[in-house]
Image (tube, rainbow, N blue to C red):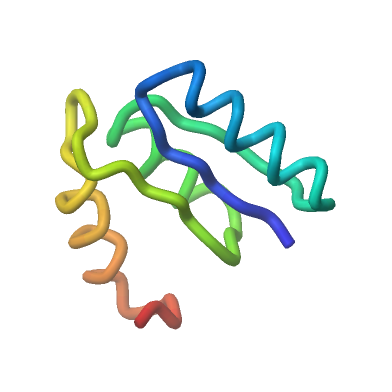
Length: 75
């Protein structure tokens, strides 16, 4: 399963990615909302761990844009 971790605190981001990798997950990471959307549209993720307070584009705005896509099965 491939995950996307979106966190602007680099130490927390590295810790999350390291923990997910130890559990056997493949993980990509983004540090802002624009980068997260770029990765989302170019990859297929089963789970996104999304910080709400991000630079450039807030986490809730990222979530709204992802949910606005009708081609994805997102709840």
